[in-house]
Length: 378
Image (cartoon, rainbow, N blue to C red; front, side, top):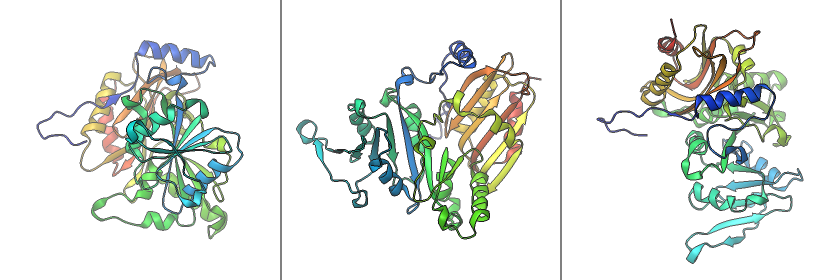
């Protein structure tokens, strides 16, 4: 977003509902009941969207082809930027709109999937697809040509135009294991971040494809995993050959439902972290003192909206020790949008502390930790 010089920067956008309603929900979750999404009315019945991105040649088309044609027993709607001959799909004109003003191509496939080619706005494609809601259980958005999945992820998380019939489930980045090192080494002029870094930084899952072609075997694959985790310490890595993978691993991840997606154990295992790989990396820090929730909101508004010319934040996750609350609070942010919700009550075996993980460009750990300390209650 570009702001005029005399405009005051808006606050970052918080998604949480009233604290009372969320604490009540947290109690149900603690009792083992099914959690509801909390950021939008009606989200409990929303259909999940999985974004798939990756470098040219990584295997996105192979994965989409598998989903569209394999007998996996799932009803998945796939939105493609365009049909390609390699997918083996015949185009079918089934909706020409009023007066021929809007034309979309839809194909129903033998394995129960539905496929469409996006010729107009992404929101229009979703609106049309949701008119056929009874035909599918999940949506896969294939993003060929999209270098940075962050903006679309933000739209899917909160865009009011969608009126909450959909929810972002996860971002999957398909990676060519054999060529990843070379792709990451490809530099850009002017400090611009390489697309391969951005795709890994925003990912919830990295599908490390073509591992059978990696020279150096297990040790070389382990080195690739370390490099990926140096960029995005929280990402889940899944191995594959020719994108043959159990779809249970890819779908229904609920990566943007904060109470489900913030893995406390994983956060604590990261400890104090400060890894960077060509500007992009992960930092994490902790604080034992309780934090003031209002001050945390101000802090997030400052770093996510006002930010600075010297750093960019792509993703954040964390658990917060909030002053006056018996509940652990969960934080998640994508670009300039964030959400804080109360989770379960603190367990006796878990130390009450704040642990925050930030993924982004040119991150200076000490600077973020120092600024966060202004939120702590002395």
